[in-house]
Image (cartoon, rainbow, N blue to C red; front, side, top):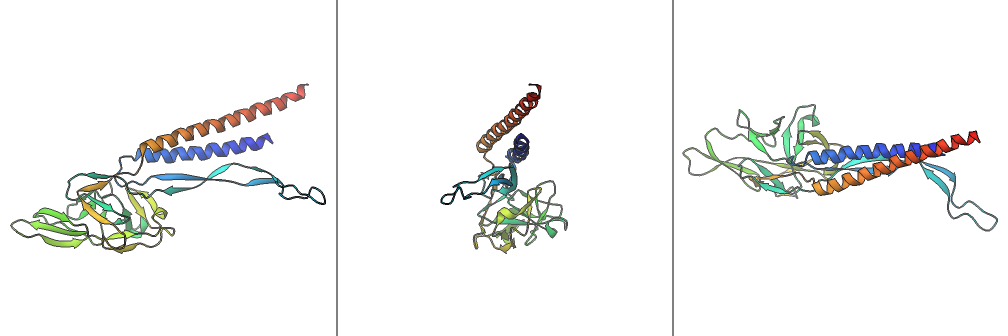
Length: 270
């Protein structure tokens, strides 16, 4: 049965190698605005049932336990941790943070989420047309609705309810130019990550519930703040050490099994 131990340990090495990839990605994004860390979940796999529980021993008694051996482990999935990250005050007028469960809505290419993406990153800037866009390599435009900052605006104010007001050159009172809306999901952990700080809807996440900030638990908008990554470096480093030690133990199982097989093979010499 030593071959079972080899295969079982191999499944452990594969699963732990995947977990290392997940931890590495979490640590790599420790400074990514709005990043949500992931966790690898594991589950045991098929069991060889050598004897069923409660088999009769004689006419009056039965065995209380069975005889089974498992065939290892596999990664059942990666689970997003959607807890809010720490706030960082930047003072930049176009930086926004959602204090709550909502997501900013983005215009994306049709190939990404059917043209709609969602993000917790609030590092916005303006493009050549004055539209609010995400300040990353993709530069996706803020949607619902599109907000355009006039060229002669000297001050931009974003309220907690998403109202955007600007003070134009020569004006004494600010002018409201739009209201940012947010999306909320019944199961935000079911969203799909597609890179560029963007999530897209999936069957598991449910349909977005779109509305104004401060309503129905979508959260309020904090101007001049950014939500940082919710990766906790110390926790991830502990997970890294645990994974490394587990990897070593599975390697030792393979080594021990190999030595056992060598001993069995050497019995032929006697």
